[in-house]
Length: 427
Image (tube, rainbow, N blue to C red; front, side):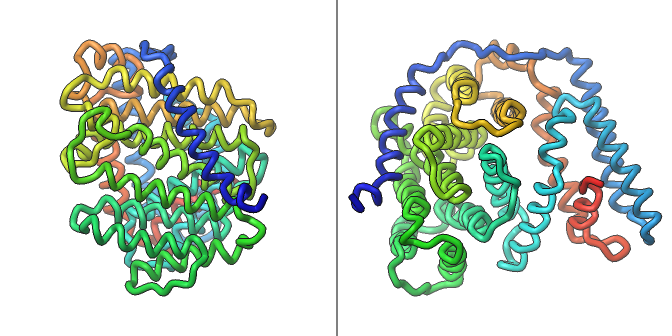
């Protein structure tokens, strides 16, 4: 009985790979039923609105005043600026803002950044940004369970493990044998064996695992630690995707991608809730699958250049990606529309928010890799873009540049991060 229990998550992963592979192949490849086409001039209007908001927001950060009374007036003006943008933007509405800018989510973000910088002062801000994305996913998972979003030691640790392990495996300067050796050691640590770190990198990894062990008892929370071993096993299998070009059907690239993405979010959910029903586990595995393929769509050119084979990069130089993008959008819609696993009060708003965010990821990925799609398809999809393709392609770079130029600055005794959090915090 104990052995069966210990294999519960592994069995789930095995079964979900099979079922979601069948789902992927049976999902419609027809153009999805999208809403809200926009004209070229509407897109240009949205770009002017967004540029104006970004410039005024950055200017306001630099003009942060001294004195409590002046700061309250400043904050009121910032809130008016944000509310005006939300009221007129196609990217976000007031319901989305209430969820994404809730006091709990903002406090979690602020605490996470501070804790990450204290944990490793040398960690690049881009890596902290990677970890933050997983924190936000876990906060959304907490809300799906009707919980107040909270930063726990395990949520911090698992989110930090993402950039540590993923970037290590993606580093072309590290040999495959080194990756396998390190991952063998890390797997022993995850399994609870007594192993000692032999490098600063391993010491950081082990410290993060020990934070999870401090919150969850290995003997009582078997599923939590098994889920960590499942994502570690999936990471190891993903090494197959590296270093060589493969043809479709030469190896199970789709299955490897599904296992990696699905196991990652499944572990998120086990760490959030401790245990899951079969229906809950199935949804979170599927959520991880769609996020993984979204990433693969985004990184198609880079993956092919670096010899990382995914179902997207595998096909990117041979056939247009039109049908893969259609399938991913339809897969996303079907997953969210069909699940009955959750009954929190705002479930419809949360599902709509997840759907819209996933769709935006896909649309921006299509824009980034325009040459990988047929001209006819790109023209048809362009009608649903929030901005013009050129603007979408450069928006992230612009935001990154604006943020990077100010991140190390302080104004009247407060850092840029502290000012942003003060500005966004609800009254």
